[in-house]
Length: 192
Image 1 (spheres, rainbow, N blue to C red):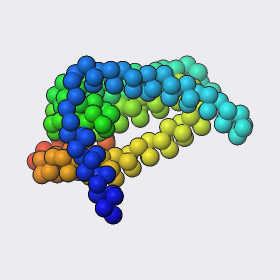
Image 2 (image 1 turned 135 degrees about the vertical axis):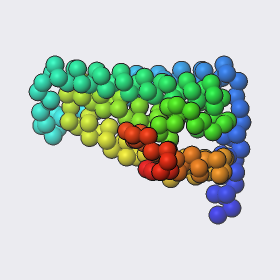
Image 3 (image 1 turned 180 degrees about the horizontal axis):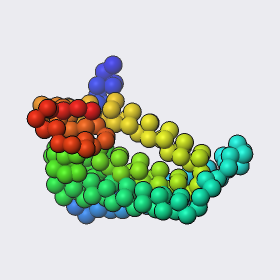
Image 4 (image 1 turned 30 degrees about the vertical axis):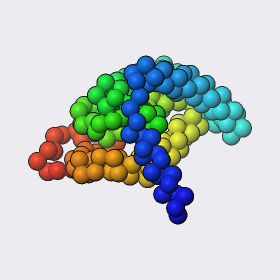
């Protein structure tokens, strides 16, 4: 148990360390290559193989898949990018847990959802899956999304409470976990 507590303390201390803008930018660019090049290639190859093994058909309407998938990919990418820029500028951090934001960000897009980067990334990868015309790619993205969101709930939210205390608890009550509210419900308080 002491080992776990020691690790928690070390990770918490690491997340409070502020890095220079140049280092943060290099980390974001390296992660960008992983998320924008490597992961889509892996998804395309894995889904092609899985579709062949399972003998699953491709999505039939290539034009519809291109339009819908393209809109989802671009829209999700832009939403995630917006959250990264805000995290970099206002929070003085990155999406990389070791270079976490130094301040609690409650401005847009974080005013709409506590996890705009996750939402944008999920929509982007679902768009890629639709562009690929692959049912197995859609299922893989959904499975990875469940794992990501579980990690955020179990690990990151606890870390946020430890780092920002009551300010984060209030923000958490007032701001949905993932899907933004369609109507302003500020008088009624939070929701998930």
